Amino acid sequence: MKNSWIPALKWGGIYALLMMIWPLLESILGFHNSWLEYHVLFTSVKYLPALLIFYRSLTAARHRQGKNPFPYSKAFVAGLRTTACASVLTPIAMAVSLQFLTPHFLSTMETFMVQEQWMTVEAAANYFKFSTYLIQWSVATPAVGLMLTAITAVFAMRQR
Image (tube, one colour):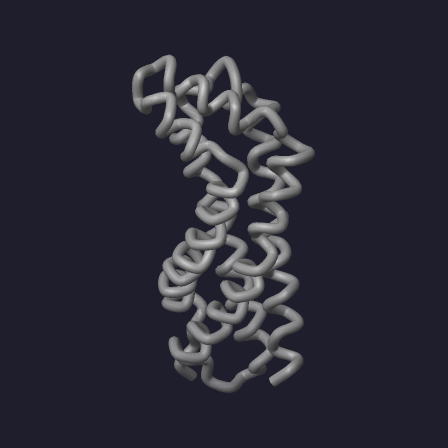
């Protein structure tokens, strides 16, 4: 039982690392300044490598089973372990990202949303706060992990 959490911690950490580095990649590629209007589209692309991370997590769990059957239920539980680890680590990774790797992101987004008249000044100020973003990631990570687990468990299971 204890050993099944070690790989989950590894893959949850890799997921959190992706979530930490992705905003830096966005910034380097210009999605935090010159191509800010495309930020929402590009930031969604990060879920493709996240899907691969979860798939590798579940296939690694299947490999640890040897030749034994690895039904959907076992794959799903392995994915839930990865989700739990990612849910603890991702808000920490995002805090590092927002504080040190992309410190101007929130203020830039706040200004952009007001200038484009997509939000009022008050709404943007409330939405693009550090604490609000950490809450969003604390809620979003388990939800995304659950969806990724449900999808990848189908492909990772082995009946015989």
